[in-house]
Amino acid sequence: MKKQPRQARSRATVEAICDAAARLMQDEGYAAVTTNRVAERAGVSVGSLYEYFPNKQSIVAATLGAALRDIVAGIGRSLHEALALPDQPRAGIDHWIRAIVAALESRAGLLRVALSEVPFLGEIPEARGLSQALEQIVRKGRDKSAGVVRLYDPEASAWLLTSMVWTAMQQIAMQRPDHLSRERLIGALVEMVLRQLYDAPEAEAPSVRESGN
Image (cartoon, rainbow, N blue to C red; front, side, top):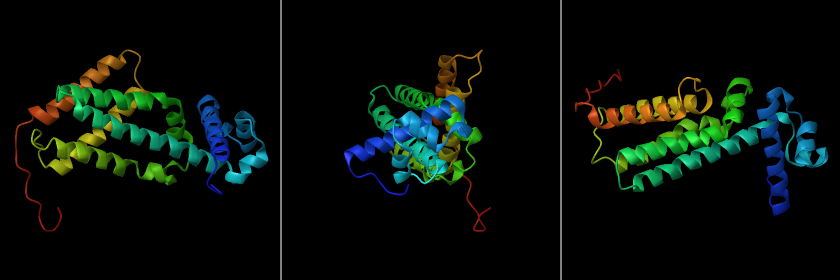
């Protein structure tokens, strides 16, 4: 962005521009996003748009960055809620997975376009930091459950499990096959996670050689 909005009116203008860009991307794809069309949908002048954004790419980056920040914040909140539930671990894991899938579903159209059409997605700071943010959130949950959950090589296992479950939740939210219901897939995913966390035989992680192999 050329400048950050400071007053309520300017923040509302920027928000309207990003909302308009998000709708255009969902309805017609990345190629349909132009500064003129975004300004028209947002109900602002092109001049007002250029006060904050130099081009189409900066608008899309801001729009996707805001969406990713909201998703990460929701993941953190839902983990806090899940850890507070009395019926652990099943209720907590079920709540957390459902909350994340719902957050992804609410932005499914925008995320599909971002993943398949936006050429600079990996350059957006929020996209680059997504994995790190997820790891930090999961680490908090792992630390709070340290007395209950025993993982083989906790750090590596937590990273792998997080990566696999995150990918599965994206597929449920955005690419679910017609013959499998959302409920069936979430139920199966919850059971898989529970088995990995609580039914796996205990084992000590192998020592890591000094060479790093």
